[in-house]
Image 1 (cartoon, rainbow, N blue to C red):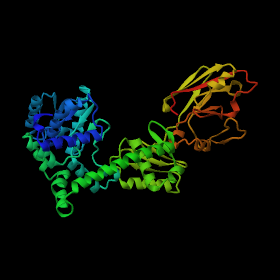
Image 2: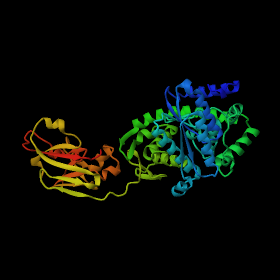
Image 3: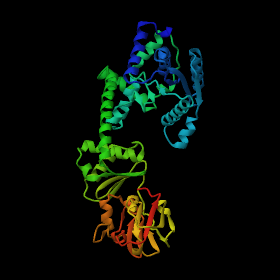
Image 4: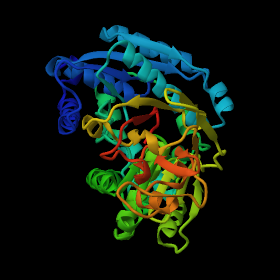
Length: 476
């Protein structure tokens, strides 16, 4: 342990941080840790603690410091960090970004713009030096502020779970259980210098008003241990969220009846049978799958989707923030990136055996070829590869999309049925029905591309010549 941590209070502080590191399994022996250091008290304390335990934990340290170019003092702060790292013999990467320009061009708040650029810088630096972890200086006051901010915004349990000690098994926060007073006390006892960001006192930022006004009032008037209690609350909720995430993931998987790159369909009956609280979580999971995050998704949106599940109208849709559309179909609830528009009707022709046709609307190819009757054909056949009795078809073959009123005779059936009913039984969403390639001989449907062959053209014992049709590139 370095000489700065020889007092009893210093040892207690470092041991408390080590306890947090150990409890959350933040570092493996030999890990290369990139510490984000701004020059402020929290990140400076973090760096000194990491330096003091580096030998004991077999850690290799590197520092990343970003100048956001928002204040004149920022250059002095980056210079301070560079000098500190030189004294500690720790490699340091100094970066600079124009946050104001980024904010203006992306139409976001200064704080959000700064955060995005800062984390990109961390990721880029971590990749350059093959860092295993990125350590940040958040403490329990930061966590309490986040809980209160999210509470004021109407967040649910996930938002109230606050700042995680470990995120994505990459970002770690060793000081998350420490208070600002404990951090400042550690720095003072060891005569460690740090820089002060005056913007942290500005009341124009909500987080600062919560720290300097709301929390102070609540501590003074209601509970002097508010910070610790909010921090503990977030820990409880975070554990419960971890449990529910695993539970909901399993239920979501069980309810998924169709999964594509750009949409997911859930079984409507199964969703209705869930407890409302569980159904809300499954809905949130569906939005997350389609959108990638839950930004701007509010309680009213989840309630609206629940109404979609229980309503009597079999075909309705709701547009969500971020370009997500949730559609109610007769037997499923579909989450997709965008509301599907009317698919343009298409029609192509296969003139003869050996010809092929490219269907631009579905980015797929239908090939035709001659084959010989053989039992092995049964093994080769599948949704996208079928074998037909050549004498039962007439060229040219027509390839088009689904039309209202279409009927066909599925293989194994003696009568015809509506294609719409077939699609419903197959749980095929409306948006895919519009794209599905239908192959016809004259006016008769002989194959639902990617799904089912017609009984009228199946291979029989008297079949002499076989026509092979392949659908290549079609995403089922």
